[in-house]
Length: 188
Image (cartoon, rainbow, N blue to C red; front, side, top):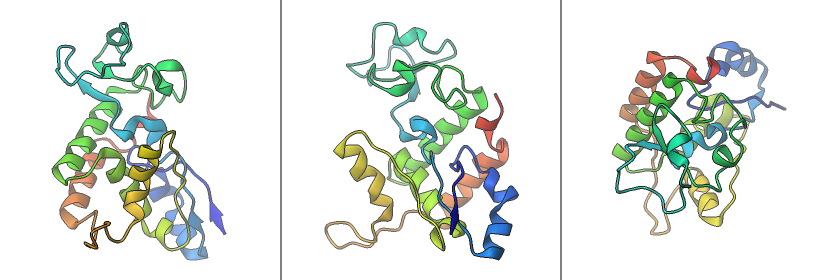
């Protein structure tokens, strides 16, 4: 038996609202949108307009997509193609707190040698209420994305090395971001 709620680095309301009750009754969480509609995937990096890392497929009007910052979003991305999709996570309408948290989580991921998507999925899948009685719903539109999304579920890499994604320092850094603004995407 499981419950299906939104849960991610940007939406941890389950921690305080349902985790204890679900643990007591042995109900797992089957979280959806663990990448916050893709915002935590790393493909919506915030940079300066003249950054050399600009994607070749960012549209000519991509600079107008978010008046607060320039977002590197492919013209094929859902937030660019459908600007009103999941507005609490869309770079064009998400709160500044949400965008700042995304940047901080991406920095944590890079410092730990993983992608932002790997960090986000590893965090969710290692929560006790997920790992004991639940699972994680992931989504990908390319084989590359699928491989990246599955990596946090592996116990070793192809060379046989044990994979450990989240040590105490990484979890402390994640909680530090969370404590600055709890569940920023829940406040528009």
